[in-house]
Image (cartoon, rainbow, N blue to C red; front, side, top):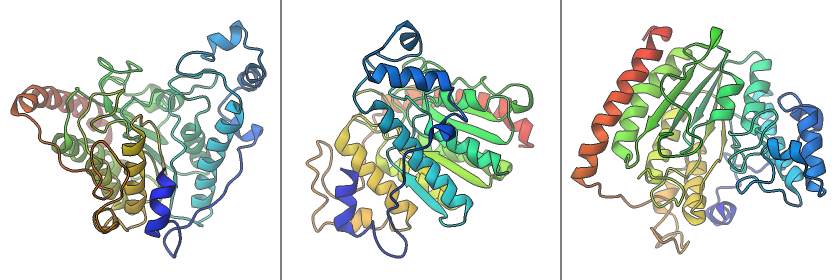
Length: 346
């Protein structure tokens, strides 16, 4: 759906936009994060042999069902995200986007939250192995727990996750006091928002917390996961953002002048998700004006929410919601700044 939106807008060809067909990740590349035993269990499960070991690894659940092509799809997603990392390392691209990536919940031997293989952890790992300082910035509505665990004791990869609070949403982790371990203390940053959080408040917090930390850390590369499940109307979450907020986050990140490897993530309202990713792609390409002007009457997606271009219409926020959410967010920001900022001279 995202591709069908972008092609007639001319945003998949030309000097600033191109499509690269990559290959599935090799087993050896995936085994830099996932265990050989886990991959063997996945392959056996796909062939109909799902045993107790596979169940304990998270396979065969409602959120991680076993299906034909499961391994091929997961390896392809990893291959494309890793290809983006390699293009950035080789200087062949300053920005790369794999909307079919962002599987941030997977662990080395465990599937969870629709994530079988963790492409973003693999990409961060590859970039760090090449001597790059990496920020993993995750604005998916769910906490990026798998990536956080992967780098929890390291200070060469900073993970910053802005998500709905685990008090109301899977996976139940991502509290401000999860700040890292050992050498990694201060390099895991969690910004949990209460249900009902809206654009202005979200962007204010992004400016107060994420941007100062990214500037202080001064990464060589930013890996950006842009899930669209934080949008109002998503059936699995409770934030009230429009894609304007995520476009603005992407624009601020691009304004830092660093190479950016972006991925998709969650998003369970397909039309809104596709339009949001199309808008993010236009921002990454420097053509975000297209989101306002293209279509002579709009990108006709038959969305239940909006059909007048890539950008969502504004949402009115009730004063009662603002009064409820603001003090919770203020207390959360104070806690994050108190626990993390001193480690970075802020």
